[in-house]
Image (tube, rainbow, N blue to C red; front, side, top):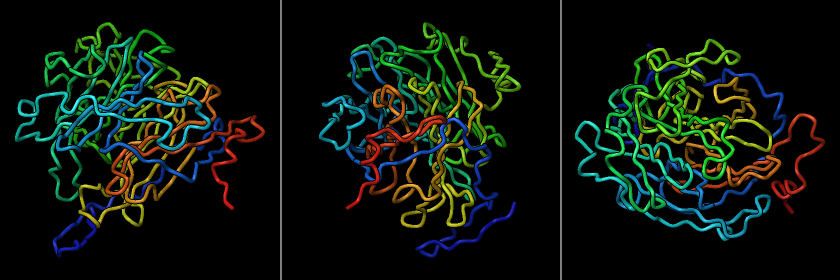
Length: 390
């Protein structure tokens, strides 16, 4: 493997593997033809990750990592004025921490996996399920990614104020399944395609591990929502193509439903009922030449580039098509884009992207996007504000 030699700001070696340039291996969408992002972004809260779910009580619940002196906490986002096409500044929503420490960190943080983070959050009829990943801060000096070592699920029946720590064992998910990201549908899981819960798992196809950044692919699992916490009931997508889905409880038979070599993030996926498409935001980190380089490979202020790519698909397993790309995303390497289902207009043409980022974007970042579909004569009328300048 070719290595790029780099000297860090303090004179230390920051050499890294020189993987091929980050070019998305997916064709352009012929369904979402154009995208107009709002030039303004709105910030609130504190922390990163932000798995989100629209709960039965009409609130949005989110998990945040690495803030307030704790690796993980749970927030409630309340919409104060529900006009999705107008929802902009933080005066239109409020955020409150409702659980500073959903699990006992002294019990669950170990020398091998000293950090825990929220990977997925799902409300089913008023019961919250939080998937947790246990991590280290990387162990490959030439491609230092934050490794997910194992994961599990805890449950709350009181709107996130407390969680049952014994819902599942800590090794419920291991290896390339260590990071579980639930697919989102409507309020309280209404509008789901069927009786299953679906979840995506970022992984590296070469070493069989799972990482927070710069993976190779996503695997897809599903389970009956009544048996979500029963590990043997989970099955995994093993179809040969998107037209012939197949499933197996043998996890070693799982095949990727999305692949982007060394550029697949720990992605969130949500269903946009207005346009009848699944939306996924993908991120990973690059150097100034667009070669993959994990953010944990470098130190502040050395590493600050990320690439955002957005995809749509008619099914949870694809086929995915690219409808937006930004090779210099955010102000200092943003990550984990997410589309809260509650903040989509009825026709699906205006959506809100929640993300986070390093340093100045290390919070709940919200940006509006307008979508123009094939056959639409123009963007939604309200999108005229997105690019307006005197």
